[in-house]
Image (tube, rainbow, N blue to C red):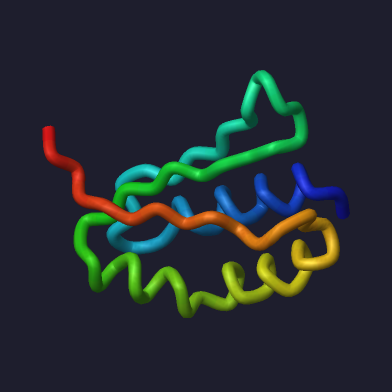
Length: 80
């Protein structure tokens, strides 16, 4: 399975999760092959539960060999 297929599978499974409001895959148009995910959860607890799901843990295992560097994670709260 290639990186895009793995990411699509992750998005598909995550969108089924309780508390998932938004989980979108975006490809940088200036750097093809560079992806990021924007996610909005009903609560911090829902996001915490997501981090322990089987499909996310499997994604981390399957995608590790494809990463040029570790993922950058930014966390915040929707303000407007």
